Length: 127
Image (cartoon, rainbow, N blue to C red):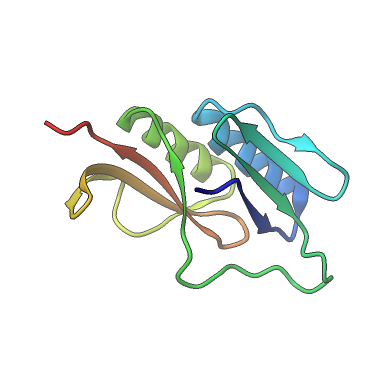
């Protein structure tokens, strides 16, 4: 459904360090510099960061969450640990299993250094 997600950042070097670490924990190669933006690309989509083009201060979207797909609960934990080690902040409940309307999930939540809300996400196979 989505081709890409792009977030504003106030310090591109700091943001790239954070996303190289967290996305690297999910098996994604380091971001590529495209002049005014940095992009991480996979077969299923792309993720980019850049300072806001209008020159205004970067801000996060209240109520917005970007979820990153993981292949296991252990990969979610590695993603979460990489985020904390690289300037992120753990939020909400600790990483763990949630059982809701979407089936059994393993989730972890972070705020990146600019305050954007992120989720590491693993969906358990249906039993």
